[in-house]
Length: 162
Image (cartoon, rainbow, N blue to C red; front, top):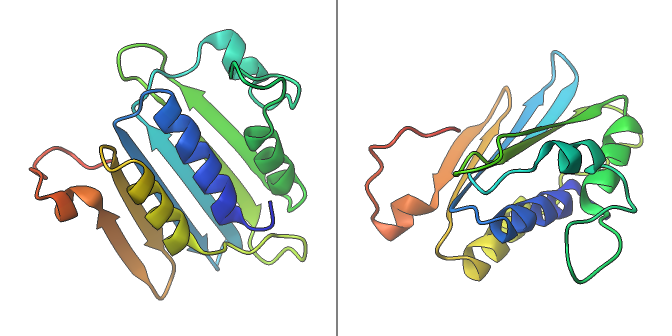
């Protein structure tokens, strides 16, 4: 994957496949700490302990159609190559979901560009209009938030995770 937005797309698609009705994406650029952080959280079925342990193994997948699962292993590798890391948490069962957090040294010469997040979001919205998607971006100069519930006229009174 040539840019990080494609990693985000892959992980969000996996969240939807795991039954997520909501996917929250947060991107934070912190120039003072020289960090780029990408977080994706969902309310899907989550991963059991064994799946969580093997989630970054490229030869492990829970998909029935393939023998390998490269999304998380490639994101983990991209983070490590830039003095960063990947963290995965899961709360299996009843909408517990999972969260993925990738950190990168922002100025690292090998860090992939963020890419076209607008296209990633458009793809997710068009492909899964039933899923509530939030996107938050923060940097020293810019901050914005997007919620598909605003487009769909849904009640926004529930707590936002973003």
